[in-house]
Image 1 (tube, helix red, strand yellow):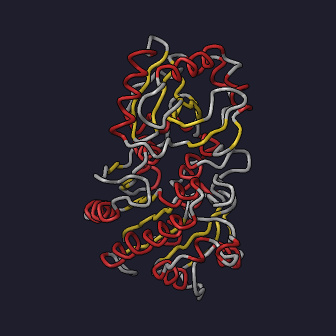
Image 2: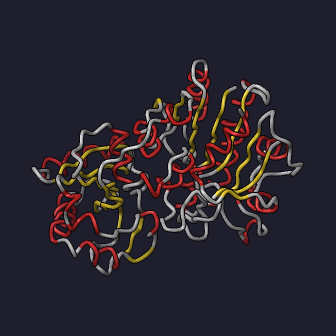
Amino acid sequence: MKLLFLIADGMGGWPIKELGNKTTMEAAFTPNMDMLANKGIVGRCRTVPSSMPPGSDIANMSLLGFDPTKYHTGRGPIEAAAQGLKLDPDDLVWRMNLVNLSELSSDGIMHDYSSGHISTDKSVPLVELLQKELGNDEFTFYPGIQYRHLLVHKGGAKKLESKLAIRPPHDLTDKSIADDIEEFAKSPLMDKLLRDAAKVLKDNGTKVVSIWAWGQGNPLILPDFREKYSMKGAVISAVDLIKGLGRASGLEVIDIEGATGLVDTNYAGKVDATLKFLEHGDFAFVHLEGPDESGHMGSIKDKIASIERFDAQIIGPLMEKYPLGTASYLVTCDHFTPIETKTHDAAPVPFILVSDKCDGSDLKSFSEKNAKSTGLILEKGHELMQWVLNLTN
């Protein structure tokens, strides 16, 4: 029996006036999820502990069955694991966005955390230029994909910089960066680095104006997934965050050509890779970033489209190959990314579990409201994996 976790990042949200007070999940045409909700167990899961911020890093770590209060060190270290960087225990790893903002001062506004979703072929030369001009024995710039890159501070885990509370840039769209500028200023080293980087990036031919370093922490160490859960598994995703969690826990990491993390990602490629892996594997964690990116951009149209494509082009084809009775399915999101706020929310996420050992809910559709109506809630997200295995084995 195969087990598939199908994750639509940021799919959940709140009722929207323009949609007749429906959520984007309710407004989307999702016949596959609706059918699964009818035949399976529907409930909610708190993927983000109350003591932690609602990030995809924390939420997806929970969904993979690892307690983030025990293992999470920061967003940067997870993405460093994706790249296989060789790090010392006292290195400080920052996630580094290439951003567009009005000015690097207390009067500045964050216009775009992704610089217009800059393409990798345009962003990598900028990071290479930063390394050439500013890289030294203390700081190293590592290129990633699109707007997502890394900055490693040698020995920084034991220094002041590890304590800086910088907000994720996707939480700041069209908002003031004054508090973060004040926080950066606590470290003359980081303050100077940001300002020097802005000079290097001036008039570069893209929308990039500055770097934004955040999510810092010391290197990530996770238990081995196969030893913990007795399954040979893989992660299928466009983003380094998921790949990093996979590599750190010994899961197979499958790269998909044309996977963008946006609404127009390579859906067919993800399905094909999943099916090929399941010929010899037991567990697939299939992650779609599109709903989250659409939520951050405040695009109702794109978020609905990404949810519908997740249903039609991920769930549908996988179920055609592995119909109910030959596989168990867990369908959920990692967190909410409401259109209104354009940022993450820590509300418990709706989920469906379908297995030949589970009774149906008789619900007519899958939505945040219907999931809440069942009264089922798992308060510790990292326990979801074992809960699923107990019900499907």
